[in-house]
Image 1 (cartoon, rainbow, N blue to C red):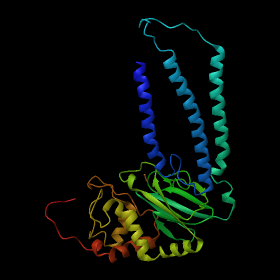
Image 2 (spheres, rainbow, N blue to C red):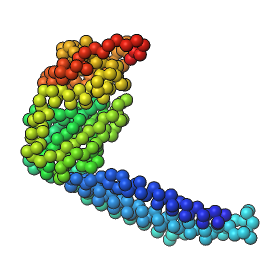
Image 3 (cartoon, rainbow, N blue to C red):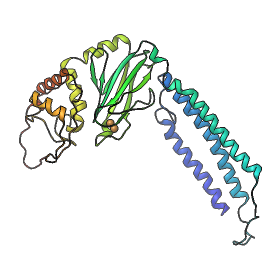
Image 4 (cartoon, rainbow, N blue to C red):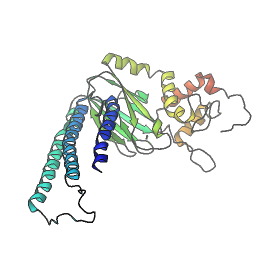
Length: 336
Ligand code: CUA
């Protein structure tokens, strides 16, 4: 028995070491990625301190466990039915192993509460800041800027400027999560949740929808692109050009389910479809969605909340694309 035990310890250690490489190679190592914001720094700090404390407790408990298993194992000359010494209670020991965890938990709670203002970037709301409305849809993200600009799936931000996101859901609950910047926040229909942070590094930061919201939940990514002020303004302006906005809207709102060329995916093929090429019919369908028993597919009302310019931009983009505006040659068989 002991020989088996002594053999399994090095095996476990080798396995742990083998896994450690992969864990540390992940973005941010075993910790959160970033941080690229003061909020992210607070989250990282919290993470490492909690992890460190847990690691100390883990090592102490496991060491005691292994020592006891070895030290108090049954000896070869003891019969299997023999009982160990009968012990009844030890008040001092029980008080100690209740008080120590209580102190550890209290310390963790106090430390966590001291970090909350930093995580939530409290105080940032008092500074001049950029407020951007985030509308989560099945299955894309719509960003609305103070100047009336709109971008889809990519959020553009100026570096070193406090930002406040006002998140809401347009159909079901989603969750906005860009771990390299800050924590996640739910986007809930009928209410507005605020998320504040100050991006301190330029670059692209990838995020995901973190709340199961339907068939394409796994295909609801978002990117935050942090730029210098000048670049931010010019990029945002270029994204408002009709075809750019139309293309972004097509790719985010339509292609996620119908494929980039409208060839069909979880949604039916729509390239060249009469509704797609008729701006009025398309406008109505985008607002109402499709949810009747006669229709095989459920379609979310993806155009809910769009300004007219976005409907127009989408139609203009569809018209500009030969693939989307022309019906594909009829093929035999197949069928969506
Ligand atoms: Cu939206 Cu998951």
